[in-house]
Length: 381
Image 1 (tube, rainbow, N blue to C red):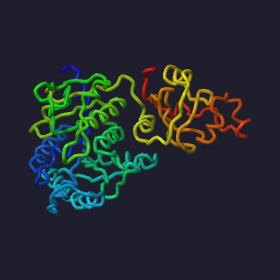
Image 2 (image 1 turned 135 degrees about the horizontal axis):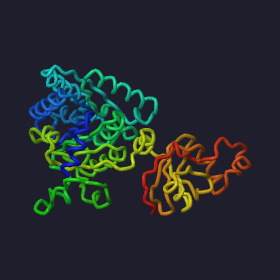
Image 3 (image 1 turned 90 degrees about the vertical axis):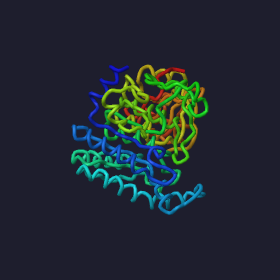
Image 4 (image 1 turned 30 degrees about the vertical axis):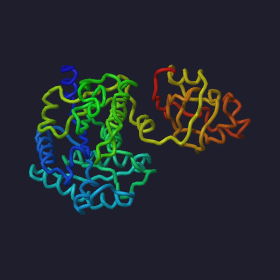
């Protein structure tokens, strides 16, 4: 394990550090001491040639503290107002902390719609790359002030996994308020819970070990961190979940100490566009495939033809992202369709030679071309 860690850290030059609310906040607001410790470490590592991007929670908690709000927020507008108050305060703390090291920070606020639109996705990547070229530290958060369910990432673990792909990170460090991933919930089974030091593959057993219970000031639990690790490792990025409140944690990681849980990258890496399709776009419907089509996609890397489609689910248009499932409903791939759900219902089960006869035209042979398809499950069910 030490050899694998050292190999990963030796090649890690672009690092995304995600800091959760459970790390950054106390009942009284932002923990300035924690921020100082982490900023000092990032600045020291940056002086040695490493590039950092941060995804930071804490805006809502900061706003709650500044207005002296007690108890839980009862509505989305209350949370959004708290974020509007707290985000500026959070950035001011970061700016002053990095300023002591003569480092400049940049604020990036995003919603899901910024990344699901391909052009805005590429614009975000270009801006991020320019900031890194300028040796500026980008600090990213969800734009909670304007986010609604339709455009929310859900939690900053999801946002971090997407940003790691965009910046082509060599490592994602997810700092949380636990030591890492345990084989069971350490809060309810503390006497028997054991830390898992390394995960070579995220199996159903690994997912089952992760609690979905969130920190009182956070959005996600360990399960969301496992899902984030699944996404980045699919792109070939290793991930470490580590205790963010531990002083010197980043130095410990880069000195090769076996702290936290290391998730190794998948052997088969997705390309950037297919990763975007698989993990950024939200599916608009489903296509149920027969066994032959499943085998052609998983085993042979083929495109999806109408002959392999049994039925559709949902309403979608040309170019929409759609999930492909087998007859039992197991997801195997996601892709961008060349035909609407209405037209697919008319040509499903037919050979490509029949498309023009039924629809009056045949712009494509494929329902989903393999270049626009990401296989998400390579195990044939």
